[in-house]
Length: 403
Image (cartoon, rainbow, N blue to C red):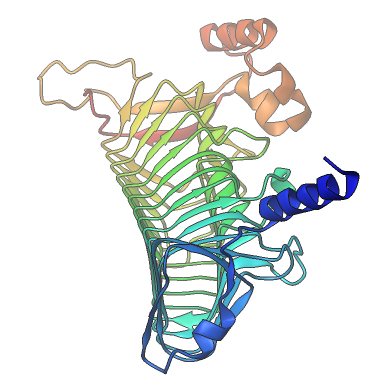
């Protein structure tokens, strides 16, 4: 074989590896589709990036791959009433400044269904989008360090959308910013920083989602009137992380959630208004380092019929007085030491939590390193046996459940 022939064959093999042989420009096909029409792509690969600027349906049938150029966003929508279905997209850019994404949506009344996005910085970016549905999509981010990734879903100034049944992995956050009245239902997310990052977004319904292996599960900032129901949050274990966090976000319902194996199950810094307390009921907090943590404010929140099981520390506070106005009733505490002599399922005496040696690390953060050390365990035992200072009562549940 001559050297020139070998070189030509080598270049041909390189070209076939770099770009599929059947890849075709997609923008011209989109431009030829009339408003309101449907473009059904044949199986194969298509060259992006592309922009849709009229209402239409783009259907990949699960076998059409749109290849980004490695710069910018792969598919942009600048119209109303666009449906994207059965597409595979890959190869966005890596710029956070320009929010390089797999799909950028602008406008209203879109449907984004059953698409697969891989090797994208941001997954789907909704920018001033209303009344749209994102269902059944699978998004996998770029192989980057956690802090350098983009969000799998980002909503900005968008409302009345449904985010349902999607699967996210290897991303930074699911972010909802300035986006009220959305529904986030039945999604799964693992390997991220914040499972859900909710900022200035009141009246969200967050229901039946499964979040695991993130730094923090759900963090709610300045977003009142939320409903968090039926979510499973697990393995949020990074420093400062928690399964669920509320800060300055009042009047929420936290119901029927399961929070397992987190640094903190529920962390609250949410001064209630006159009618703005949190209602936390029928949740399970188990196997966390700290079950509940109250920071700063007196509280006034309501904790009814929750289960606290196998937490290393059940309740912690930032300083005496934090959480002192909270209301407790009918919760199950695995550390309750009372009896139920009449068999009605309610303890005969209230369940009370006092701080003994725990006060040392709660009031002096530097001492947290020694928490549960033999020295502090011995000191705690001695204080309980014969207190040499007045212990601080954190809570009283007058009707603790026995089962």
